[in-house]
Amino acid sequence: MRSHPRPPRPQRPHRPAALLAGTVPLTLALLATGCDTASAPTTADAGAARDAFSSVRFSVSPRGDIQVSGASRTAVTPAGDRAVTAGRAYPFDRPSDQLLVVLRHWPEPERAARDAVRLLPPPEDAAIESAYLVDTGDWALAELDGNPVQWLRRDTIRVDATKAGAAERTHLTLSGPRGSRPGQVNPPPDDHACAGLDPAVNRYVDLPEVATGAAVRDVLARLRERCLDVQYVSMPGGVSRGTVWWIEIPVAGRTAPVAELPPTEGAPADGRRPGDRILTDPSRPTTVVLIR
Image (cartoon, rainbow, N blue to C red; front, side, top):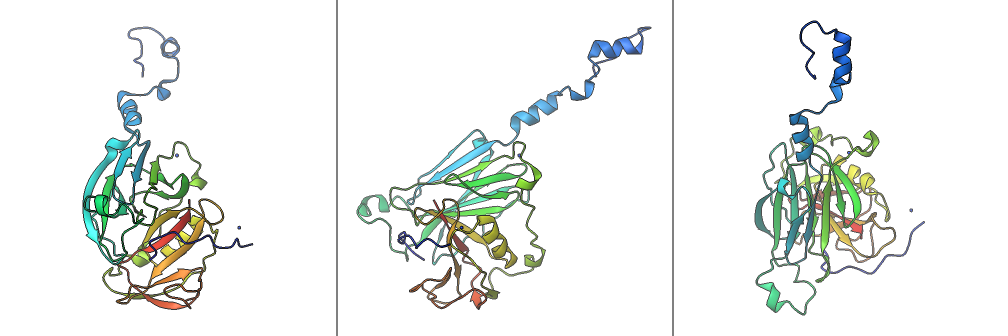
């Protein structure tokens, strides 16, 4: 996988009152209470509205400076930091009622002094994955660098900040629905067919069709049909902001190549085309590169 942004590709044709006592007529009692007891909020309702998930923002640099902000930052709980190599993902535990955010970055302390000149460390260095549990309660919209990515509920979202330039920060924002129309909320993924798959065993998948400038939701649907885990990368360049620039699907093997779609000359797994069957390594997530 790349350590630096590649040059832009050529453009291609793209949320009761009480009744009065005694002999007072019932009608007068209702008039006295306003006749609309159902709409009066209770103390419990007010507390629930006050505690409802609103939004939280994760800001991460390539060297691991992570800041958490937003009205609902108290809904965020750190879930640990783990070193990972060769593009592999750490299998963090996720409670069934929580959303898991995993942010990949380079280790900061030892690199702050000796890495002042290089934009990024060499790709063989171990990266760090920092995980957070977020109690969103219900659906939340994930936005990467201001671009909508997907609706999430009791799910996992992974963001890779290692490919950003040394001075670039990646921003992941989670926001509550706030009256969104039903059509704006994606249905929960049908992962029944993926439930029995062993994440430690390589398996064959057919490469999907992916075009530069494609909508994230369309590409994500094709990857989930193939039971592929996804991590997002946001990079400047390309055609239309917020769309897919390219994707990288890991190919099993000691050299850790990837099948890049749409295919380009000189790619690590050059020659792989949509429809081809490859042996993929489930321990390494598929990378979806978005145009920042």
